[in-house]
Image 1 (cartoon, helix red, strand yellow):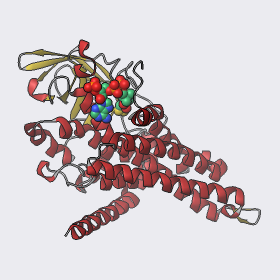
Image 2 (cartoon, protein in one colour):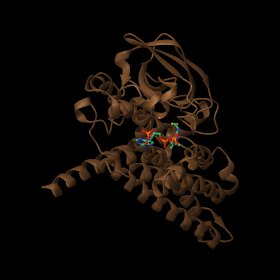
Image 3 (tube, rainbow, N blue to C red):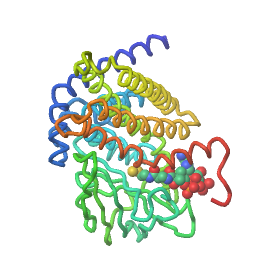
Image 4 (cartoon, rainbow, N blue to C red):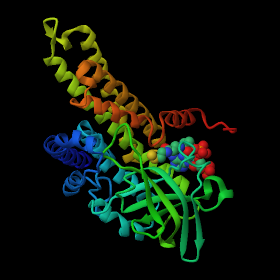
Length: 389
Ligand code: COS
């Protein structure tokens, strides 16, 4: 029986990936350069993903989602990122933004918020980072939430919020008790249109230019207490549990970028002739391609295992999510840099996609925890946390 259930799940995943590959080839890839060039959020691609049920893959069916596995979800993000990193973030950040509700929300909140996120009618975002609080997400958080009867008032600023300007629902982390350390942070849902909630500056970035990254300002922003996720003081743990499940999504984006660049470089190396033969048959280039493929495949195995750990609810999911993000991010950077090298001068030109892929790859070593933070999480899982740090 278990074998049959697994077979059915595998078939469903294969069908979904086949649909996604077609969509990416026909609709996403032709738009990728333009999305980068115009630096505009691709609403048409968001609609395409919504129509094809890609916005809520891991959301359970009772809340309107597909009830798919994290493994399927990361494979979908990977497929999209092969052609367009900005478009892959539409799916990945929808997951990041809904996870606080799925992980820490009440039944009522799940029923209130998740169906419209799963259908793609509403866009979700996740607001943790502040100007002085990036890697030190806890110690330097300044945004405050103060309770007044049935409401909370939020004051502060968040920065680097992906999709913040297009989001309808933002999960915001704020300090409710400055003396309580990690137990003094609380999570809230803030909805678009709430008075005192303003979108600030939009960043101009090296890559992922079709994905708006903005500042969010909360100025005397009053929200119902019913929008508090979990209890007061549970916010930091919710934020960290979310990252355990969202980091594999970024790893998938990184892997997709690497795989897309490798594919392009390989085809180029088969066709471009120098000194009387295709450049891929010159050992200097052929060995480079061999290393690139080996790196991509090893990153993929690590990522899929991390996704399986998410599905199984394993206790070591933080460790595996961080290892996957670390490996895939580094592979994305090295493989895209080498892909530019394989194409030579053409690789440096924006007429070829590998230049964009190299710019897009860099962020995967920075956001959702820098590579240094991933190493911190990994080493703490191995040897524990230093008492003084
Ligand atoms: N799951 C559940 N709880 C977790 C957790 C996890 N994955 N990681 C940490 N916690 C808990 C700890 O158990 C601790 O709880 P207690 O206070 O009850 O003991 C609490 O959270 C504080 O954890 P810790 O002491 O490890 O906090 P640190 O300040 O040392 O920070 C790091 C931990 C650095 C790992 C965290 O701040 C981090 O991930 N920073 C990067 C943030 C990031 O990725 N930003 C990008 C945002 S999205 S673009």
